[in-house]
Length: 249
Image (cartoon, rainbow, N blue to C red; front, side, top):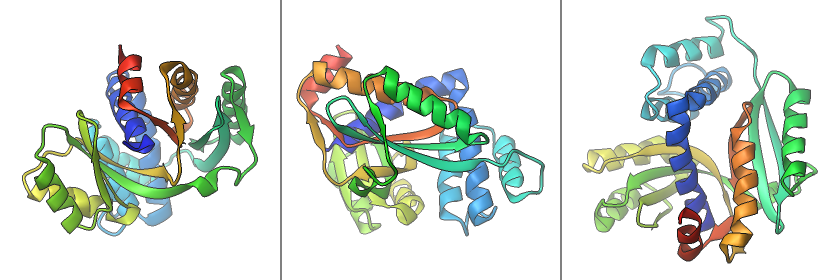
């Protein structure tokens, strides 16, 4: 099982908890605003906005809240001008980490990210230090009780690159621009989709062979993800099923 799928599963579960606290809503609204600003307010003409729109709907963000965010992004309504910033660094054990943030204050966000890395045994790196190990992809998550053959057939025919599973979820990986069309193909095949998103997937991974190795890494990733300005955290960490079971236990 690939590391990005494990991390996708962990983030999916965390996202459900964040949604209950309302924390996820604020992050999704920022993502929608920036997507609309960068590519226009029509989801049919802006694949990133379309994916973010659907991601917000999956998290039960009200439609009128989404539409207002789009209008702020396009300038139809007044709003904050968020800047996209990416940070690169290392978690304990040499695990690569990429942090994507949207901020109205680079100094504040940079200080928060740097402090979090430092406090939890990681280190911030220079731009480009780890980015070469990742590539932008789309992922679509399907409940693990879905039929494997049906998921694979629908996904691969729609242009997906890979389908992997860990029991709880099937993770369908595709090109970033194909995320919406792959999701649509799965739904048209009668397959329930839990969520879809854009992510950065590692081209090579670092194995975490025990819960003791994984805990400090996950602690850092979780803390970074909890920062208000941070939208996404990506890693090349890879954990086996036995490690995941030990962590959940």
